[in-house]
Length: 387
Image (cartoon, rainbow, N blue to C red; front, side, top):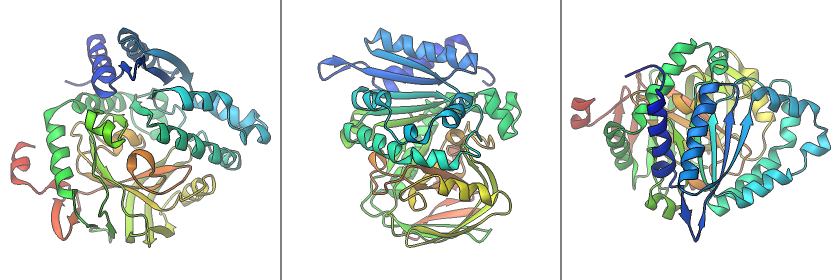
């Protein structure tokens, strides 16, 4: 099945998302308070959001729905005085301190909206860090439910029909046994291990340690076990395992063929060099200045390794910029730099978390010197036969 989601599919997915993925309902003697932000530039996104909200009502949850657009976000930064941007919004703080569930549905309709606003965005970085700390401390459940907004497709240079097809296929694949099996294989491959090494034909050779860190599974479901561990977030489309490396352990270099930085633009051929966990140098074939502007716009450990992940969604394919899909692509690995506290169980404090996806079809992943991924595929005979 491919193409647009039918009305019935939307309803079924909304029901599974609210009840199974997010476990929304009544807890600790009261019904959940759910804040939903959605991209209002696409009618199908709004339609799905309303179905999600209606499912929340059916289980007794209290909801607050807010429309969003990149154009309005950009205008806010342009019009607001610097003194105001430095202040904590009383509305944002109240939601952070009161909401039990935070949901975003959509995509940036103008992915490069932050160009020219680096200085102003940096003013809000300490506020964003404080909001993260509040929600992490409260173990607030959260979800980023990606949706194929047509304007985003055009900005990424991906035909709208293809963009929406990729998105919806990867959403459908989220709730499959195949995805769960792949997640379990890679989870078991990393659990209790010490060192990971990523190598590729392009000269990539990056080593880091993971000893003592929990392996996290993004299978689209917040289970009771997840809640007990404080693993309170999901992405839809789902399909990855991830872990927070020891923050001072990464050494070596890694090349990313294509990079999209939300709000700042694209890069080609980005090469990062790590020493003791920190990016000590970087170069790119094209778009280096976008990476520089991103770093200048953020604070804290914005350039320190924060995550390692492997994609397990066979319905996902490259969109050219939608990270929530691209990091889930089967046959890819990714690292992130920046914030990894809260659900990641790391120690980096930063105002940003930047995922960088690597195509592993010409690479390998070793765990404690054992090959677990070869040319993008899991090194397991049983899985190989099924995939």
